[in-house]
Amino acid sequence: MHGPFNRGSGRKPMGEINVVPFIDVMLVLLVIFMITAPMLTQGVQVDLPQVTSEPIDDMEDSEPIIVSVDREGQYFLSVGGDETSVSLDDIADRVIILLERRPGTPVMVRGDRNVPYGQVVTLMSTLQIAGVSNVGLISEPPPSGEG
Image (tube, helix red, strand yellow):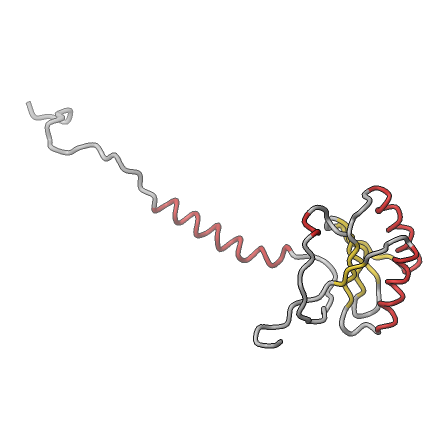
């Protein structure tokens, strides 16, 4: 009997999955993430000095408190990604409150390379008055080929 319901036609059912549509979707997602990832970096635009130095190892435990000074000399306080503009007078009070909540939190300073040296020293002195005994300075590594 030869009819549409005959199983003897010699064709076997296909036991494979066509993965080409999945690959297409993954490539589209990859392109989307590659385009949006640079847009996710936020914060104050600071032109950091470039020096060769060893990274600090003990910062893996907690999120540091970062105090930034931008090109115009404005101060910013960043904790856990939340960045707020603050005056020099308010920095000591806010850092004291943050260190009371989380003692032992590292404090880092990001200073633009074009900011006068005295302004960074004044900031570090303010942090010392707030009870911070150890302040780290954030820099960028020099481009490869320079030493």
